[in-house]
Image 1 (cartoon, one colour):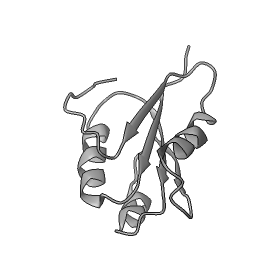
Image 2 (cartoon, rainbow, N blue to C red):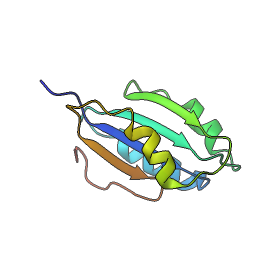
Image 3 (cartoon, rainbow, N blue to C red):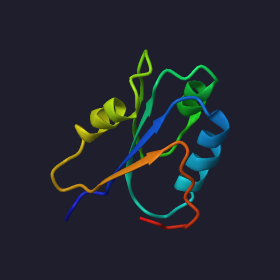
Amino acid sequence: MSSPPLLSYVTFNRLGLTVKNLASIFDTTNDFEMHIIDNNSSDGTWDYIQSLDDERIISKTRIGVNVGLIYALNINLMKRRPDQYFISVDNDVYIETKDWI
């Protein structure tokens, strides 16, 4: 049996979008393992991420400087197991379809 997909979520500021878009992601019955990386947001995004309590969140990482999307994405990609699909969602992506995975 394969592992649930690894869902990489990278954010930098945009607190309002992060709140809205993560709510839509968590409003699914699909199983996934989420790894969130914050690129040193200064608008309260990291505090919000710290407050999240969903068993599908495996890791929350804050990088001390904004290293950009690709660097952060690669950090999460290194966490992928060989039998996992890898899904990347940035904080400006809104998922409209429930059970989309």
